[in-house]
Length: 129
Image 1: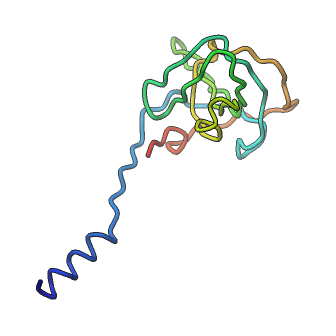
Image 2 (image 1 turned 135 degrees about the horizontal axis):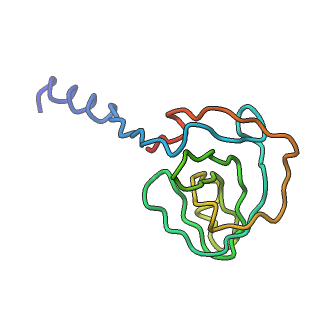
Image 3 (image 1 turned 45 degrees about the vertical axis):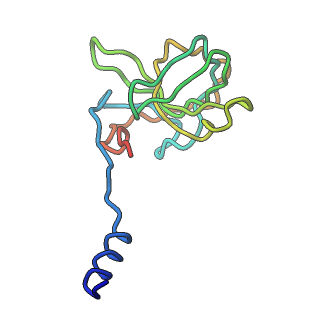
């Protein structure tokens, strides 16, 4: 094997290609519990199953507890989406993954944030990798 081929192979193995995709925005504004959207707004229980149509969303199973981190402010004529993560001992592989889901598939059971912050969404809010 020639020396230039070995170098080319090593560089090729070390170089990772980025496959990140910025998806369409679901809304221009969102409501959060703090300026970083890191505090949980509320806890909700899934009323029905929801299968994620793309990488911006999360799968939710009926009966799962969902931590709600933000609520998108819908434009006129669009659906209402919230972002959050699921909690369930049965579906441990999904815990900690944050994504969007329709507000209609959950029922808020406990509100944590008394004061909220309305802010603009960014491209990173709809980033998929």
